[in-house]
Image (cartoon, rainbow, N blue to C red):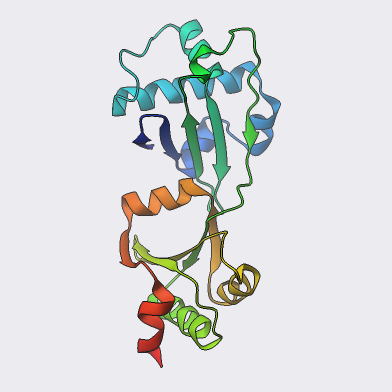
Length: 204
C-alpha cells in the first residue's frame, strides 16, 4: 500500500492488485456499500492517516472511524492492471455532515486527464513523432516510471479524440483522472512538460 497526502484536504491511497484482492475490493463490492465495504474503507483511511499524519490523533474506535469516513468523499478508480487508486477528499463543510446521512461509494469514471502507457521508449517516441507530423500539437507530459513510459493528455485538448486514436496504436490507456497523474508525479520521472513541441521536432 502506498499513501500520499496531496494537500490538507486530499489523501491518495494506492493498492496493488493483490492487496485489493485480499481485501475483497471489486467494482461491484464498492457499488453495494455494504457494512464490510465501509469497515474496509475505514481501516484503510485510518492506516493511511497514521502513515501520513493526514489527521491529528485519528481515533481507533471503529464507530468513530466509520463516522469520520461517512463525512468525506471517496473516489475509487481501478486501473487496467488491477491496482486501485482511492482518493479521500475532506473539506471543512463536509466535516459537519450529519451522522445520519448515508454515504455512497461509487466507482468513478473521471473525464481526464488520460494517462497512456508504452512498453518501451521507442513506442513512446514513435507516438510523439506521429502526433507531431499530424499537426496534433497540444501540451502533454512525458514520464518514465519503472522502466515504462507514459504520456498524459489533458481533457481540454482540442484534438483529444484524434490524439487518443494515435496513442492507442502504440500504447494503451493506463489511467484516468488526477489520481493516476499524482502517482506518476510521485513515483515517476518527468522527461518533458510539452512532449510534442519539445521532443517531436528532434525525431524528424
